[in-house]
Image (spheres, rainbow, N blue to C red):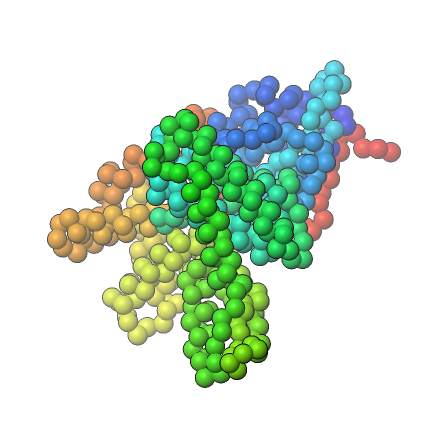
Length: 441
């Protein structure tokens, strides 16, 4: 199919032919089923659809031209800053029907594999403990965004995607339409974001309760306050002062260790004199999330969520203690990856590998082994625990890689081929590539 005259796409990197071949001459609600991927969608004020694109899935949102352009730029900047967010693919303008009727522009983002809108975290009812983990993940996301100077302007669970992360959740921004990036945020900007978040989260939980999707013990107002408390606690830990005397240097190490345990590295910090009691004040100046992720990546090459990294680092430490307590950590990590992690994942039946991310599978397998050992009163080896883990726990889970409903066979094959390199979009330059079907002379 030839692209419609006037169609214009702005994309980061090469524009694949499959993107041009999508039915841009039709509104999203009329797109044919063979290009639509049936994934769970969150609540949105816009029409949103998922579509197949080669070996991956994209999300397409119809919006205004100004909003599409702004959000595309925001997501690109957030990506360069390392923020947890979806990746922009392109903005599409100049859409029209074959009779010339104008259609809404669209923003295209890449579907975040293994991610869930908050309503899809549980099929039926969300337990109070699970909801609290979601709220804590949302608070951490907002702290990370505020630290890099991003004012969200529309904080809500609906504008967030969640990935399982070793018993917790990792949160990703999915809607940046109202966002702004500043060198730093004022207290007023942060407080206004918090006020919006509190109202939106409480409203979303009330809506879930009306639908019987939340534990009756949940108090929407109290839960929205929990979000505020979680945010403020994290913000104070990451940016507040620690007072110490000159002979209390250990307090500096203790503060940095606490930040590392929260998953942050301290790149810079300020020390200044206090006005009273001859004390000094320590304040982190530049903090960078992903402490355990980076450490695991350096040791093994595995790119996983923060809490998954923390759990796998613990498994590596245990492996090292058993095999060579005084050996080199990097060698032990390499051997654990080669002799434990990769063999275990390879033994997962192929049809079950999209249930969870590999690192999440390993985390849950370790938990299953521990419960099995406790039940049998002996130390069960990981290899011995694998069969029962597959049958008792993994097989009954939903496929969370993409959560499709009856995708075509050729799409499944393409997705399997792309699984190892899901983010390979071809060469990307700082300048966007622009394609126009009917360029101005």
